[in-house]
Amino acid sequence: MGASPTDSSWVNRLKLSTKENKRVLSYFNLGIFGLTTYQGIPKSFTKPGRPATDTLHNITAALSFRPSLVIMSYPTNDVAYDYTDDEIMDNFNEMIRLLDSAKVKYIIFGTQPRNFPDVAYRIRLKNLNVKMQAAFGEHFSNVYDTLAAEDGTIRAAVAYGDGVHVNNTGHDILYHKIADHAVFQEVIK
Image 1 (spheres, rainbow, N blue to C red):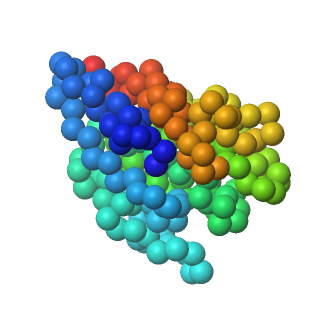
Image 2: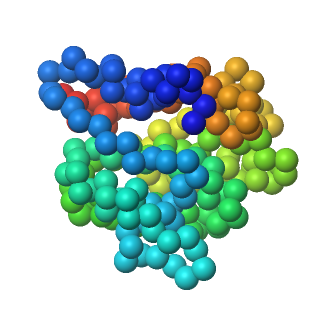
Image 3: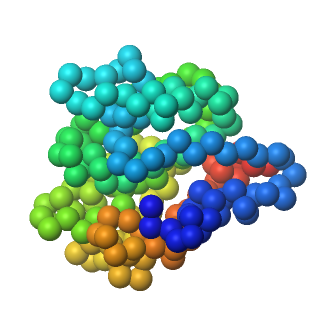
């Protein structure tokens, strides 16, 4: 969302930038509007009272393509639905457990700013980003610090205008965060 035309999205820019790569690369974009980490976890890890796993877009579906790399991006919806940081981290850790067991490399985008009216939610996104960076280390891509204004909203220069998504400039930043990431560079060699 936010990129117009859609070929300006970070995913499509990534595809285009690696088109001439020596190693043939295939991309499978399972991301859809509104997903949370609960929809991304394996079916066996579901929790009562939370969204059901989306078996067409979850980690198990991603692994069915036998990838060399999985890029995960769940930037704000979990916080918007008031899931706790522990729940969110548990969900990421379960997805990582499957990736590690399949010996698949991964990159996790951190949170992104969102124009929540309640400043407490904006602070949560910032603090969750810090927790994720500490937990996921070399697999983490910190986009929050580049996209956020001082008050935790989306910087005007990268805002799509809906208070949730980034514009083409923001997608360009996201693209570079992946294209320049050491894990990505290792995989495409």
